[in-house]
Length: 323
Ligand SMILES: O=C(O)CCC(=O)N[C@@H](CCC(=O)O)C(=O)O
Ligand SMILES: [Zn+2]
Image (cartoon, rainbow, N blue to C red):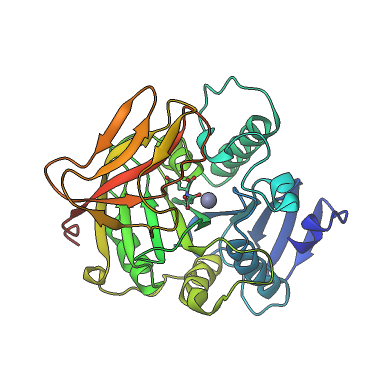
């Protein structure tokens, strides 16, 4: 990973302890074990889909280093993806448009991020085909722009089929504090794997976005343990999911006009609740957005998004699933 970011040439294929490493394209690596464990999943771990979200890159790089140094015994096929290389170099969320809204097979746009989305969709399709006999699991690791009442949470993409209960146990043990279910298709990278491949897939928010070298990886140690177990092809440790809080998106606030504002402080933490009737947004085309007859939390508020993009999610509490 570091080699990719430093622009060093990598051999196409390289023997590593317990298997081989294949450099499939810029920022796309596949680890193939010589002796995969029978129950191993075909794992996809993606980081840097947003270029300024560096903690997940450091976390995954640590895992890769441990595989190379034989401190993790490779036992599962693993696809590791560094998403938006140019944005990572620039320390920016994206270059021309948000990559994490482009993962759809009918994508027609041209440009840096659309081209990268097509490369990444193809890499997932090919990986799926190579390991069709195994269940696919995709964790797309991010960090959030602002603080959160639940610093580590997952977004569960919209899907027709339920999440397998084991995921809630594993994610609890990995110290994930909340789950947010999407209410509609969102064309994110994790949604791609869930929607088109029926894999278990999540967007994971692992604290706040900070520059390289400024991340405290200590709170992510349990997540590192989960990634390690999956790379080794072992059953990960589980914990009681009643510790996690569950939410569902009720509404998206979209930015329709250039003249748009959110009516609360910029540093409002994710999951902050607003009472019925509160004015949340004003948009020159769409008018006002107010909280309806029950309180709602706000997640990912961002008034600076492109016109036509999501400026916030409004979420409500939900009972934990029966597991
Ligand atoms: O902190 C923020 O406002 C954005 C953090 C982020 O990048 N979140 C993802 C969530 C993707 C999803 O909804 O599954 C995104 O906005 O792409
Ligand atoms: Zn992100």
